[in-house]
Image 1 (spheres, one colour):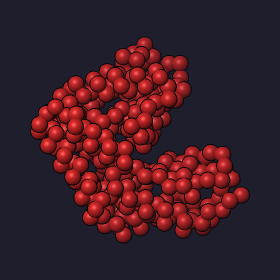
Image 2 (cartoon, rainbow, N blue to C red):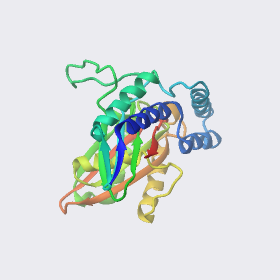
Image 3 (cartoon, one colour):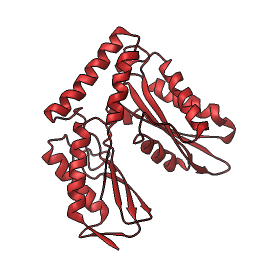
Length: 280
């Protein structure tokens, strides 16, 4: 059994929080740069250039890419031959978030109760999705999520008879309804299958996948391409001011589901699609 001290996790999480908010992922940065070259709208191209410039300045000056530094969402894969010493994994992650958001001067955006709305002051608690895997490694991925885009996401419980076209229509409808609100160009995470909550988790996790990658299943790779084309034909464009670059990528994750159901979730992320990973 490999023992990992809680302090190691705390330090790693603090670094991830700061890095994710200051340095745009390489794949997303490349996607934005490509969009500058392909966008047909002069205004849209100008906006994309400013977005790229903003990412450059954030990295150079070590400042947040966006003022909304998000609610901290984590996907943690913990080896079955690994133990954490000193704290639970959730306690260590939350302490890392406190430290990272404090030391990185990142905005604290979490309220302790959804209706009484008192800020917790340290951006905790984080959302932690913990999965046990084989081995003795601990992999931590942080995906800070701003709510301009989170608020434009959705879940729908389709009937099996709605089929592929029902899924596609819901994805496009969700992006179209969001319009300029999620600060396009967006990345669209789609979760299909499981139960209501599983589809939502899949959609969120899909936002941590590379946007320059390809779905390993050719069926879903084709669906991603078709959805991206349909979304970019909506004319929403960068920051909702027109153009063909409404989305940079659609990523789909699936899970087996019940014979009577077809759950679908769409999680939209803004052009600041942040995620960083560390392995201990």
